[in-house]
Length: 263
Image (cartoon, rainbow, N blue to C red; front, side, top):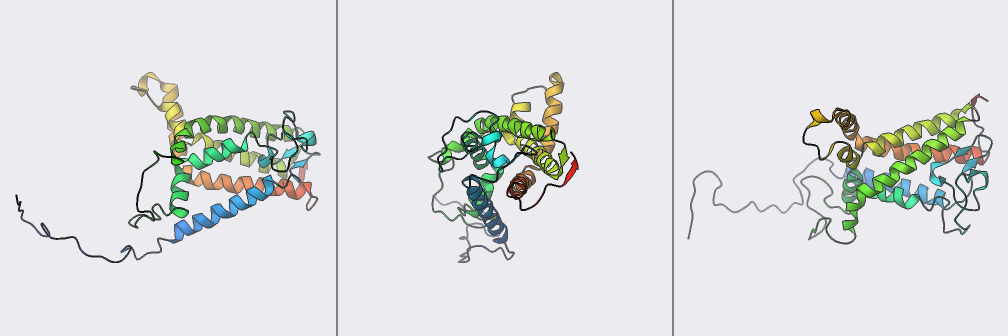
């Protein structure tokens, strides 16, 4: 049975376009910058985590977030919560917390978009074909673990409390540039953590009437404003984490002295 219709283009074959995309802008620049930025950060973080030194300044109780909480025999005075881990070079000082932080970032909705586009080309940009012939979504191994994002959020929330304790502990020795850097990092980490989509749903999800839950509505409104800046906070916290770690490493290694304001 043949159907007919009127109008321009109806019944005609699709245009034969051999080009990968008709986009004439530099669509490849954003995924390239993301690829370089994430690669550089992961390389730096990996080196620092397995360096096993220059992570603590005893005089001011500065502990880098890459080693918090410090749980091996190498920690010395930085071991606020004991040393249940052996001093083996393949075991990071914060081995109990780093996997959860990594899982939180990997399953983050923004980071999924970032590394799907920049590392997997899936797709690299809007109106650009996917780099893979087939797509199964996040229903198979290993991407099915993306569904664990909410549980990773709970762990990241607890770890943010530990990072806050580190900043408070360092504050007992006075005030220096290191203290300011620690607090800026903690504040940004909290902003990124609570701006998470899972946090937004936990705060305001499954409610039929916001009017009956004014406190949760206000919290949901606050988290929603942060959620709109989730991408920016994701990158900002990568920067503050690296800056905090590098500054503490530099002071611990005696490359520089901490600028003291009080004490």
